[in-house]
Length: 270
Length: 289
Image 1 (cartoon, one colour):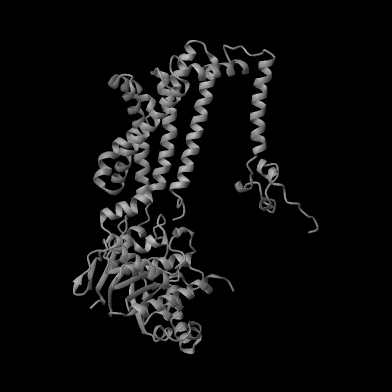
Image 2 (spheres, each protein chain N blue to C red; image 1 turned 90 degrees about the vertical axis):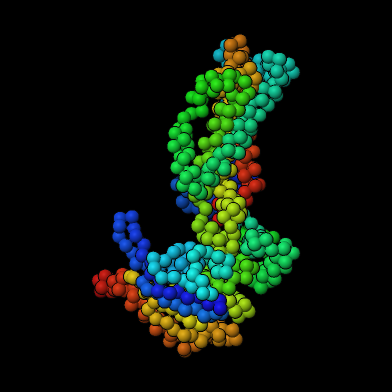
């Protein structure tokens, strides 16, 4: 099956002065086929490191990533990646960016063109195919990034804070687009985010990570992604259940931050 | 605010006598470089003053033609150079041969330097092997190599083009190397995740990403080589703008020397403008990654 298993992953970075940083400590994660999960945590909890290991860009100090009973040893087109920003090829048009994967794989040009046109429709950029990507807004650029990833038809899509640099309104629209794409393609999606709301809204399952050492703290099973396919996002985000879970997770993360940074009230004189 | 501004006319803005409307709305101007306008009027003034001073001095007979020619003598010489050429070589051929040497040298330097720089950015073996050579050669002015090159090649075309090849080679190598270093790792990661092979990543990601820096290198190389060719021709050549002014000096033809100097300046400027134009045309995404 096309799920993904993180088997007891530990990652230790050794700094030039010899100090060791435990970025990840015994992380176990089993992502089922077709599942969308979100990973949330304060900065320094190792969430991006985990994603880079799953993508095959980093080799873990111990443990392994297994996909379809095979250990992951490097990047591959079965695991598509959507980055925060700046990963598009700015010397190419929108179309050529999207066609990159199929073209590199030597797919027939006509087939690729059909696919590109279809994807331009899906992400709502049908009039922008011939534009150079640097003329597009941040939100549109991330649509291109999504389409480029989908053009390759990967089984797993890894998203590293793909909406992190967008303004609040664009971000909400893009969240709905991600849900729509998940519904239509039923890809396995792992989404890293530092927005609690986004993690709740998009994850069927939500993993909360904690720092020092980076580890999985809690897991939540969530109904909102499924509901997001039928209900309006505003309605869901305003619902009692959503707000309650958000507050719970926020205080969990606040607790971690205070542990690291100290309590603000203690620092400031009253 | 009761004060009404009438927008400045296009001509006065173009001349830099008035700020444009946007700049007028800025209260902080000292220290804001974008609020300093072109001052074009004063540029024109400078040129006019210099030319008039020359004209007046000529008319009053104040110029000693040994040190600086009069306007009339210069124009007459220019006419003669255009019609008869200089030392049996047409005026434009002197310019043409110099430009040809520069283009040839830069082209060869780019053909070798770009692959070398890419290799140095991509492989530690290539970097290790060539780093001592590149870093050693970089601070040596190309002119210091002329004696050695004359010993090796004599003073024919090969010698000059080889000198310019060396002058541009290290500039191009360093430009291509830093072009590779400037590639954002997320782009490379994205390409690998999209299934690209190493060769495909080199040609479809790294090379286009390095193009802006490579082009900046080309521009620098053109400038350096233009300066070098003129200097090299001063030392040893019978054709070219540099040789023209050197030989003219021997015949005390100060007017020809002055014309040569003006031509050298104008061509250098034209090359720079041409390269900037090409850069905008070929690399429109520059600085927009």
